[in-house]
Length: 388
Length: 226
Image 1 (cartoon, chains in turn yellow, blue):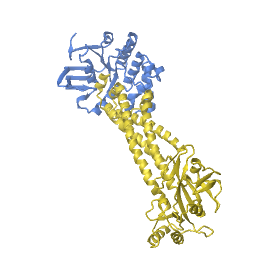
Image 2 (cartoon, one colour):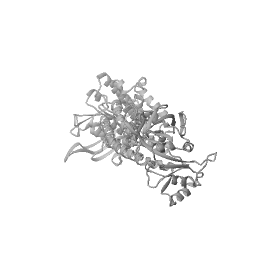
Image 3 (cartoon, helix red, strand yellow):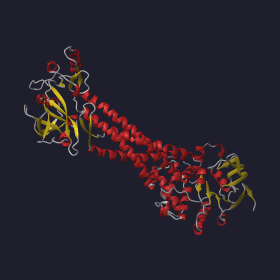
């Protein structure tokens, strides 16, 4: 009893301009909707990707970020002597005390200054973070004012390119290497020998210790021992969790605001779809009457018009997702609220975003098309003929 | 005389406009035997189209008994009535009422979608019906690519494709020039004479009415003797 799908397809094609405009409205909403989800997803991926499951990070108790944390050398020595810390093949313990400092650098192009995070690292820092790979140049040499920079810093900040110099801590530092970190937040950082950084800023303290654990079960014992140690006021977290927490607030903010805005937009698109479908029903009163007279039941008419509206929405949704997928070629940067430094990240499309966007567009088509379809199916045959 | 295909006993129909009851048909009693070719004539507002709609089961009487092809229509639900129409009635309209986005073949195939026939069988039946009305070479044309007479022939093919016993035609020549009108009337005459289809036709056109075997005149909702 199904009215051929061809009928719905061709009706949309016959009214191509209206179809195009209505689907365009839905496409714009879906574009914004999926862009927001891609943004939140990108932010999460960047920050969560910054951490590793194998690593634990120790900060001062109550510190929300490394930037707010301070650990003196005494504390560092106690923490680094814990038995859970893994060793590399040469027997060296994989624990890196790191310092985080914020500086201002002018951006390329706009000349506007923005915060950049400098991370004073130990040689172990690179071993523990295998995702960090040098793509150009070489590592810093100990004792020299040399830095390596994340790809995003090299591209976006003045003086960040290979061979250029950056001034901070009353010294000029030469960029001797550029690294990538699989899109993680480290790509927005400048890395330098921690000892050099401590000297340049005359800071007697470190910000955090990151350590690799020898076994999966070691985290609980390390955490309970260090947090109970009366000589220390520290907090131990898994590295991945620590960065995930940093992304949580911002990703939620983007999602909530974005979804709120798109839901309001979608009302407009739904009303658009409804007007289109009502017009389509009004134009086809005789056709509806004819099909009913031929014996098609009400539900077939309802189905045909609802299908047409869903098809319209699916076209819009598909176009919206396609347009949004091009955003993956762009990088955006924002101030990370947790560290106050600039963080660059990408729009990342995922299968779940595609599915959510399609469901959202079909929902718009359903709600926009439902009332017109009902009105079409409830029309009395004789009245339908009389109206024409 | 053949069995009556259509039987109306004391059938009335009135419309309600606000609080006003407007009678359209009053106490109509008639029988139409199988194989009849009946023309209903009368001035505008005489109730002839309403009578046709009642017989075709697309409208319901306000009083009386209406039996068509052995079925008492008053007792049918909306869905049962729709199924009954698809089996029993072939519709021919003044303005053809073809779906503009479907080809001639697809338009003719439309009523067959309500039958259990396979796609292949449906296409075959539709092609045969189009051949019968002389449009075998126009199967893939859209309605707007056809002349008025051709469109009406497609509509007739659509009306006969399910092989219903009764064809109802509302002013089938009302929108056609004289030659095309003549062709359509020839076709209806053939369907009646050769294929035994019972035809009830509303018309203003005396030339069309001449082709019917019987003419009934209506005025103000009742039969009049001429």
